[in-house]
Length: 108
View 1 (cartoon, rainbow, N blue to C red):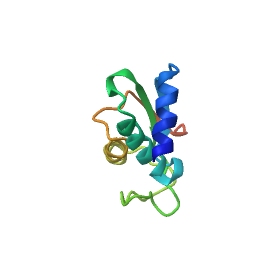
View 2: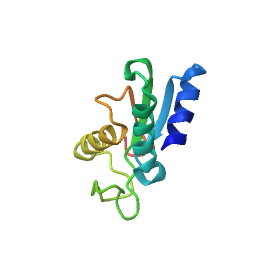
View 3: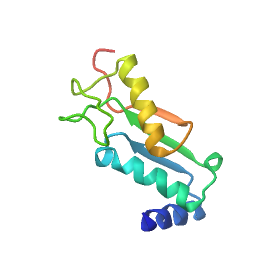
View 4: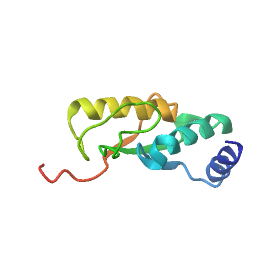
C-alpha cells in the first residue's frame, strides 16, 4: 500500500492526472489498491481524472464480494449500475469521470 501511494504521488507530481482502470483488473483488487493509494497520497480528487471500464464478468464472478455473475459480457442497465456503484466504492470516489464498456457489444 505504501509503495502504491508513493508511485501515485510521484506520477501526480510529474503531471500525470489521468488514470485508467477497470473493475476486472487484478480481479477488482487493482481499483481497491489504487483508490487507497490516492487517499494515502493525499491527492485532491478534483485534480485528477479517473476512467474505468465495466461490463465483463469473470468466469467465477467478480472478486471482493460484489457477487456479480452471469454471461461473459453484461451490458444490461442493472449490471452496469451495480458495477459502477461497486467500482466507485473500490476507488473511494463519489464520481467517475469517464466510463467505458470494456468490450464492444456486438449486438449494438
